[in-house]
Structure formats: C-alpha cells, structure tokens
Image 1 (cartoon, one colour):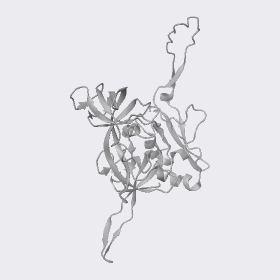
Image 2 (cartoon, helix red, strand yellow):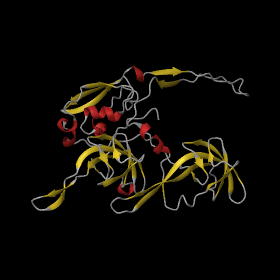
Image 3 (cartoon, one colour):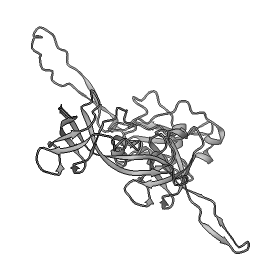
Image 4 (tube, one colour):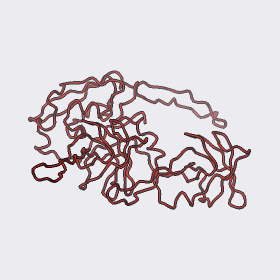
Length: 358
C-alpha cells in the first residue's frame, strides 16, 4: 500500500461548464505547491479545487516523467492555463529519484557452471503519497464483512481449547466443529456485529461479521471436529466464536475518484466506532450499495438534514431544505449498503444525514 497510483480517468469528457476556471478553482488557490510528507492527494486537490474529486479532469500527464501518476514528497505542482482552461502539471523533486540495488545472488547447488548476471532493481527514495488516508480504513479494507442472516449461526464454531482456558491468543491451539469448506485451510475468527437496517424502510441490509483473528486448519478429525492454530488476533478470541473461510477478493488500495453512474439518494446509517457525530476521516455506513451502482471510488455529497420549524402564519410545521455539508468516498460496496470515508465537512454531521450525487 506504500505506493498508490494517482489514477487518471482517460474517459472523462471535458465540458465548458466543468472546466471553467470560475467553477473549478477555489478563489484563493495557490499557483504552485510543494508536496510534503504526510500529504494526501485529496488534501492537495482541496487546496486548488472547489470540488477535490474533479482533480483527474485537470491533471496534465507529462510523458517525459517516469510514473507521472505518482506524486512524491518534494514534487512541485504548478497551475497553468491552456486555452483558458486550468491544468495542473508536475515538476519532480528529489524524493522520486530511484536508487539501483544489486542484491547478492547465492549459487544454487547443481548450477556450478552457470554464469549468473547481477540483477538490478530500481526503487524510489520515498513512497508516493496516498490518494486518501488509508490508516482510517485499513481494517475495513481487509476484514470488514457483510453477510446474510443465516451465515454466522450456521458457520463452524470454536468448541474447546487444549486447556480449560476460555480466551485464546496467537499460537494457541483450539478445536472447531462444523461443516468445513473443502480445500480451505485459512479461516477468519468472527462474531456478530451490527445489524444494518434501512432507516427509512426498516429493511435489513446486511449483518456485520466482525473478524477478531485468523487461524489455520491443521488437521480434520472425526465428528466434524478440526484442529486449528491461531495466527493473529485483533482482540481476545473466545469459545463460541464463528469460523468463516477467508474471502477471496482483491483488496482495493487505489481509488478512482468518480461520480456514481446512477442517481443516488441515501442516508448515513451509522458511524463505525459507535459514535453519533460524524467528522473528517470518520467511516460511515450508508444504505445504498451495488444495487444502486455504487462502487469503490464513487464520491457522494453529504447533506445536513434540514430541521423542522413551525410556521406561525400558517400554523403548521415545515422542514427546511437540506444543506450540503461535506463529501465522502465509497471504499467498499456491498449488495445493499456501502462503507464510505468522510473526506471533508463544513459542519458537524450526524447519523441520518443524506448522501447524494456530488
């Protein structure tokens, strides 16, 4: 994850309404910026643009630069105009220089007469900056899991340990019982988490399976009992925890900022971590997913729900309009719901606020 590509969407269509400087650039934007350690692409884009997710539309790829989609500390980003349209261009700094490494190559037995040529590998002196702060979503990228209602109750479970202990840690051996998936040797140790319900319809959108550890199946015995060794844990493992085969899916570490292909009108259901207030770099669950075309990288605007006030003239109550108050990016999409990272906020947000196309 150290080197994340700044992905340029080649298929984006330039339009006058989008590309006009007055619409795209902030009023007090810099003319150039030197990238610092700890920056993210989103932070830099927010310095120049009103809507940071439009960065790919004005990024000018320089074919003379190796890996022009990667941005490193000490690189300088310049703003220029071409035919009245703003463009951001890159001037490489020292941190992106590569150093050649020639590792020693041991001679293998049986290859005494083989002439070995030294291998040359190039690597950057510094890591490219990430598109978004990955430390805020790292655990959910790899372990966040939404399952069906019957998945966990019917999954194999931890039956007993080698001793009388009730809690287990790395290196401990335990016995699991259940129906095992043929050919699978690595299992996630899970327990029930949040039950996600649509706040408008009360429909169940998914059941959260919290992964608290990883274990390896060592031996399958009689009566569907298997012997396991715990590889790693994020918290204490207990008797009764469920065992699910690890997911075979690519882990997204590069995100393509883009607008959803369909109209989205959703709601923030919860904030991961159990708080009710939503701020920058918080992870939220929303009630729209792949069934609405949402995918990793889609950007949504967050709207603060308008309050209900009493009209003294008409003697009734009326809801004030929703107000745009932030931006989030979807980083994991399930069938009926998604996880998103809040990238910017203008005011404190809450569970129940709406998300729409930017």
